[in-house]
Length: 273
Length: 273
Image (cartoon, rainbow over the protein chains, first blue to last red):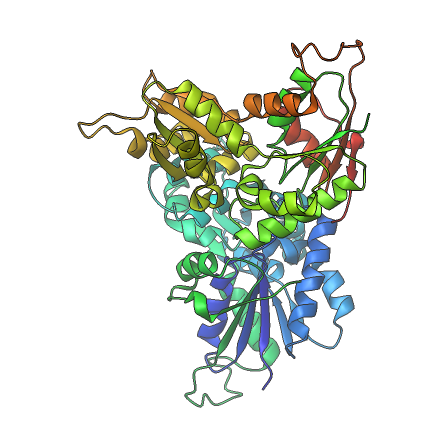
């Protein structure tokens, strides 16, 4: 069976890959991190679309049968363009699944969304949540520094907590009114900071991300996955082929954190887009 | 007279451009920020060389008569390659001038250097200081988050101070011995954080950067500059042409901070490299 292709601007998308492998353990995957040009989150929409199309073209040359856009910024900006260019395969982003996770988690349907500057400015999460529930109240804010903190490995401690409070305090300051009961992490880097983010929001707030729901969407689309009953798991552990556009050593080091298992620099193939 | 070309990975190099315009007010400049692919500081040496050559080729097409590499990472990695490719014009980086500023400022010749991961790992500043004074003691550390803080505009306040202390405390902890008396800011973004950095180092430490000394080097090379006596200032204020590879609005907003005057997005031409 041909592999499932996954791309991200860097290593953050490995949280999505880990969830995909969890629900589809016998599938083969090919992961591309566009590390030479990360981050996407501060770039213009046109540039993100251009880079995303190049990533998808590269993965198509490896014969993928489904494309997962693990990058929130690329999902927010480039999904339509990717579907037009690749009509023969399913193209699945993380925005709709993330919005679904938030709507499912929220009792009050008052939802806070954080992401990169590009994701939040584009309004894709806000629109996706309102499509699922037109009565939902959504507030959104960019939290650009979370990406740099995660890349630096400073995910806990006083700096991470101070940054989290500075971004999140204004979103959860009640001012006498009701505050959101759910916080959607709209960037694949942000789950690495979940502990510090959790300390900065009121205790009853549920913190959700796109990884699990995206993996479930892909499994449904592929007719596979744990519990689907449509395919028997043959006990074989699927393979992953690793591609990056720069810095195998850095990719392996930072990527191991997001993937939750050790990556070796020697296993990462560098490609030029 | 043909313009002087200046390039950087983004807007940080505008601190160097501001210094250049200060000493050579009647010169015309053309500034290129490779904003589509910033930051350079976390990329591999090979990729930084490739991108730097593309920036220089683009500026040469505008007929520049001198190339200033305002990016520390590019100066550290690509200066030789740039000089080989462009033997007909002077190519001036910020490493040698920065090292000269530090050696001139330090009484004890015990110098601390901070920069991006790429700049520090390459060891160019450490080598340049030792070339000027083989007896100098140099310690160096990467401070990657300073770039993100400067780009976010969080240059003062509790977060910037906490980050500065976390990076700098280990460099200036005496442990019973003598500590450096000079701190060299080896990244064009870092002067924006000078106030927070100043609070994190012992009071008698001198904080220096490359901008002023680089501008003086360029002025000497061009036979121009205030006080050189070789050219009369005709009272005309030289022009600047602004080029970027992405995001004119963001370039103008962040760039105004570094340049110290207001940039308008409409004045920035987008080019593709």
